[in-house]
Image (tube, rainbow, N blue to C red; front, side, top):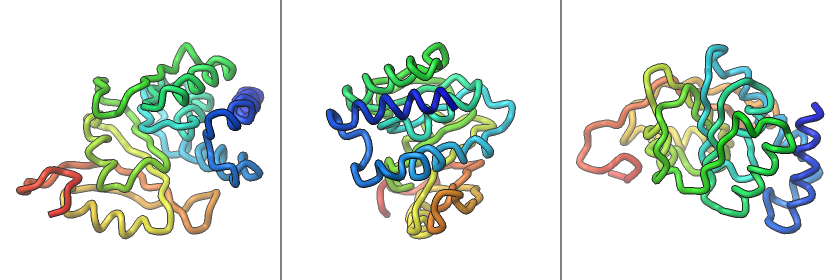
Length: 197
């Protein structure tokens, strides 16, 4: 808990400078952001060794999962100010030996397949799946917290992707779910994955 408190304290200190989270969610920091991220740990395979978090922003869920596990975590965030925050947050939380921050867009980062891929509030599934697929391998799972329109996102993504998933009700928001993908493959179409037919 001390590690999470140190992280939260740093976030509140940096928030006025770089707007890490929506200002209106600050009173709900522990439920809206920390609990929402922490619930993913129960869906990570116990043998998972690596996690790639896409569009890490303020570190939710990637940095929370690094604190709660022994996984090696790669946080991918293109905003250089947020990347600087993530490096400092990993340091104050005592996990900088297992956390690497990539100040780049996911499309330009080369990493081997991960055991777990996560992304929260980054993009619709149609845009998210091509990014995640770059880091997909045998046995990889993806964990994507999604809001009440997740069924519409799944319908749109099904035009270009075969996906196997479970939708688990969120512990932090009754209208949200956690999508746990265990398989994804692009369909053979005349358009690229992520584009509408």
